[in-house]
Length: 345
Ligand code: BGC
Image (cartoon, rainbow, N blue to C red; front, side, top):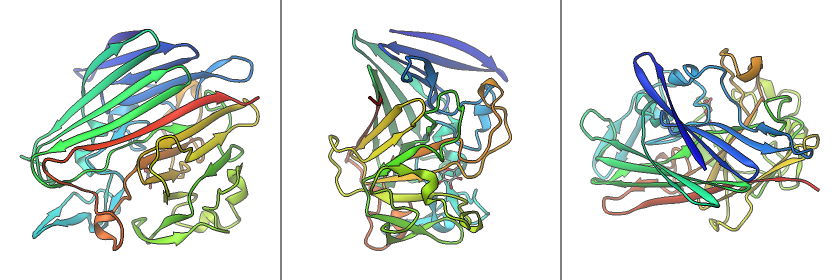
């Protein structure tokens, strides 16, 4: 079941789509193909949203935090904002520290309107958000067509990331949802528990660009057992440039039935499991909050959410022994991520 509403802001029309199935209500917006809320029950059946949300719709227009939006043509940082495909060099805008490209810079899909199509069935609803990126006026090669397919059904939200191009190009699509299982951002995520099935992460340089593979074992990236996130937040973590965790975790299977991440909250008893065919998840513990009002007067602060950004290895094009992330003309880009929500016994 779904409903559609229109909202005018700054002479632009924003479309909101609310989808309801048993025990789940999700709201999307065509701008950025953004998730505005995901309501699921806690142990007492209380429905609250488990993603961070701004108080006002207009806060999503500039959306410095990329809150719950779709990121593309590329996610994460690209070193020196430059990449090569064959003999051609491409230079993107340097929107991070004046040297790196972050999340596609001014071309980021988070700041564009998508077309949408809804298919509603008894037990599930699918929304296909489509965007075209023209080569003309773009720093990325090729005319690209990207479709983000959200499917909502009982206890689950899945996202299919698809794309095509008429010239070899770079494509790395993700969703930037900030999860917080306490419900309506009541508590931060440091007391949530996390398990990640990953043995390696990509180490970042001084400008937070992934540069090489490192082991997780006995480091702050070691979530091989389900444990409170704060257990890996040692004294001195705030001396790091990241101020928390902001690294790509490498996965060792791309099997959609395999649980890659388990995230739980002891108090609400809500749980989240992440499945993906992508080879990597950037885990970002919301280390750099902005100052805009959040839903219900909640004050934005560090660690009020955590992103599980399933994607290709960011900056892979500039790192030896890592997939370059090039989408060849004629090939289909296709990855799927499933977020499953449950209540612990
Ligand atoms: C990046 C962070 C960045 C954040 C912006 C994340 O995906 O990894 O470094 O600060 O996005 O909201």
